[in-house]
Amino acid sequence: TSHLGADTLAAFQPVAGTDWRIVTRIDRDEVLAPVWQALRWITGIALVAGALVVLALGRAWRQQRRLQELEVLAATAKADEAVREREQQLRSLGDNLPEGFVYQYEVSDGRPRFRYCSAGVEKLFGLTPAQVMEDATRIFAHITPESLAEYAAAERRSAEELTDFAGTLHFAYPDGRELWLQVNSRPRRLADGGVVWDGVCLDITERRAAEERLQESER
Image 1 (cartoon, one colour):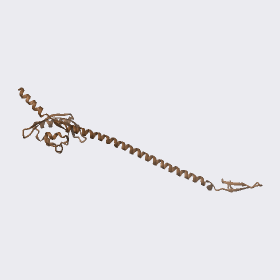
Image 2 (cartoon, rainbow, N blue to C red):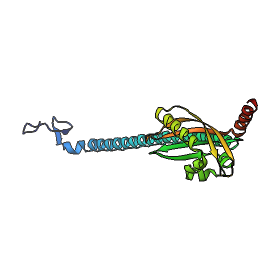
Image 3 (tube, rainbow, N blue to C red):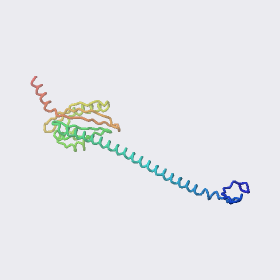
Image 4 (spheres, rainbow, N blue to C red):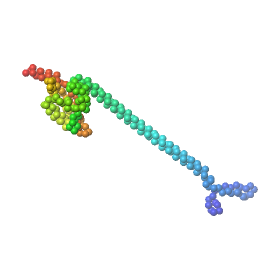
């Protein structure tokens, strides 16, 4: 304790052969300076280490998130490829249908259009799939009035009730040629309120003619 009554750090050295001691006052800040410097170094190192850990965790999280995104993309691409393969298979089957064609027919806001037609439509109507998809009314240009009325009523009922469509369409051409088609399709509602039918159309002209000949022979 100093002469002022305050705690003081001091060092002393005994004087040989006497009871005297040499006392030297020590500066507290000077003594503690190395300790504080060491603490500052330790704190700095801890902060740097903490920052490195945070960076490493952030990088690991980003890598994990990127990996998850790649997995989702891979799964989506695989699903898309499966859909494309299935569509290609269906189109191949439709294009090889001997006496008919498959189609997707849509009515939205009262406007009809063909989303898709297989190649067989050209053999029956002399129209390419592109021409039919460009203007759906081309197919109905030579349908008989009676058949058109029946078809329109059946289509309307199928759209309202979402029930399967099944009907026979009769076409009469100026050169006297007749065409009878058996149409079967299944409707589904679109998000905009429209309806699309996935269907198949088969040429039954020869069968119809055979039935008529049989009926005439039985009279």
